[in-house]
Structure formats: C-alpha cells, structure tokens
Length: 235
Image (cartoon, rainbow, N blue to C red; front, side, top):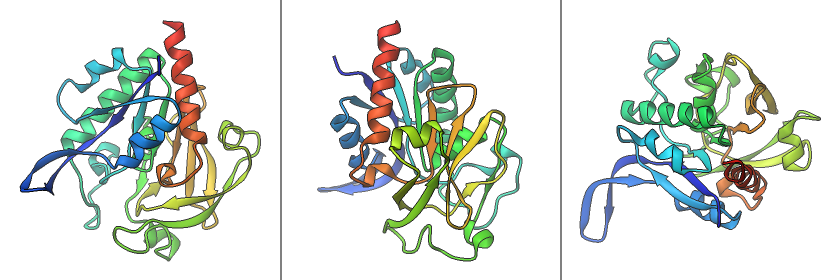
C-alpha cells in the first residue's frame, strides 16, 4: 500500500460554480506531486484536534501559505505581515509536535519551513526586501519567480537533490532569521537568504523555502514518501 502523507491545508473564502463560501484549500500541485512520488495524499484542515490524525499517517507535509503570527516567536507584528490565521498556526504546531513524537518524516515548504524553525525557538524576518534590498523572492502578486540556490556540500539536502546547485520556484516575503535549537541551514540564495534547513537531531525532517511542488523535480517528495514507507514498516 502507498504510504499516507498528510498535507496541512488552510481555510479561505473561495468561489466555484455558483458558490461563494468559506472553503478548505490547498493548491492541487501538492497532492499531484505526492501522488506522483508514490504517496497517498490526505488533506488536514486547521481544526481543533487535527493532530489526532497523525497516528494514521506515515508522513507529514507542511504546506505554504500566509504568514505565521509573529507572537509565536516573540516579535511585534510588522504592518506588512499578512494572512495570519491563528487557528492554522495552532493546528500545524500540534500536527508537527505529534509527528515528531511518532518519529514521522516531515517536509516543510515555504511557510512550512518557517514553522519548523519557529517551533524550535527560531525567528523570522518579517519583510525580506528590507533585508536584501530587492523583491526577487516575490516579484509579482500571484506569480512564481525563479532563482538559483546553493546547497551545502555533504548535507542531507544536497544528497537527496543530487547536487549543490539548483534552480527553484519562489514566492515569499519572509525568511528565516535566527535558527532554532538543532536547526541547521543547508541552502542559500545568492543574497544570503536561507533556502533550506535540516533538524540536526532528526534524520527525517527537512524544510525548503522554495516551492518544489511547482517544479518538475520530485526529489523532495520521493524522499518524503520513501521515509514514510520506512516509518510504516517500523510500526
């Protein structure tokens, strides 16, 4: 059987057909890539008690989306911080903690990578252009850009990506600032922005600032599914 990969989803008002209602949303690319990599994707809405589903999962993918509440890392809210959803922050933190307790593999994408850092006591830059002096990580609303990333040699990230130089799809305005406990940066953009992290005390937790679901390379998703299959076999 294919390993079950839970993917954190979010709630927004949406329109489809004749309807204009609050909806649980997730870009289809996430589920497509997990399925293509051999996993069975399951959406996890940001509701109370969502972490109870973790005992039925083999892996967890923390998806991208709106900004994390800066209060979670002890900072005042910058006026440009947007899309904060307290219920989502709470649900995803609980999901992550439950997944770590069970030893499940975790992949964080964009916001998901940032959450991996925040739960370990790390902090975020709330508006990256103020730091790097350009808008290259999110040039146009609703349009993914691309840029080069350099990956640390001999890191797990480089090993699974098959090299130390990759071109990635990007769309974010926040970034990792201070790394949390046992959090190691393993990839950077040319302007120094952290683009990937690993937990040094966990062999199966990775995060990337870019959006691999928007590219053709399935390496990260295959890694997640492979680790999830191993986790299922251990139970």
